[in-house]
Image (cartoon, rainbow, N blue to C red):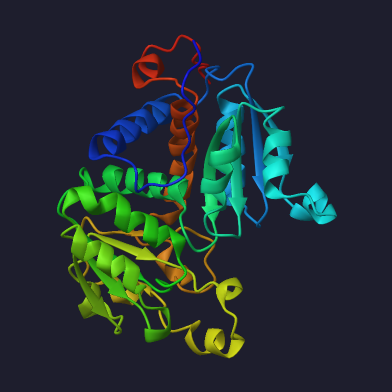
Length: 318
């Protein structure tokens, strides 16, 4: 019997139960990351846009689960430079792989790929649109540090216009009664469509242009973002806003004890280096959590259940 193909393209589709299920699966992989659950499987990574953490953690997740990895990290080495369409690339690669991990600069590319591909598609970021695997590791990081996803004050800081990670996080948190604080300059404010989304889903939010110790004193999570130069068509606009929101250690004196600072990375200078040694800093550990979240994503799209992960006999103890 042919199983139904599963994709991981957007976080918006996930129910509250499914999110908690994925978090539980990620915690199982944190206990035992090295297994042979995907032995004999081939994972293709197609990165039409640059990536360090996302690509390496997907490839590490595949390797630690016993899969083999094929693909490219530089679109200049793909046949796209010869004029091959995305559809043809996906159809060709699906001949060789059991699952395709794809990052693309065009919004909606992953959704399109999932519609034409006979094998599972995992969205590793599409333009300024969605970054669901980053969102999964963000949720896991929030849950690990706060012990819950419910009723949290979450401050999203910096580039809220183009930052796909914050857009995904809003959608995922709709189940958990958050209060969001959008902290951004006017040029990079949260787009209207996401504010409408918040209102439609009863998500509380406040907007701030100031960024100081008083504004962030009530935060459970401060989610910093990089002002992304590559998303600006006007470089003068980029120069004007790039250094507006810089988190420094002395701003954390009044912070709540449980507060943690997240950042999808890479950072430019929006978190000063003196914050790295502060107990509130969590962004390096957050990136590490990407491995466990992405192991869970691979297993889920390939039809491996939480019970199978819990009863797995292929664990490699190191």
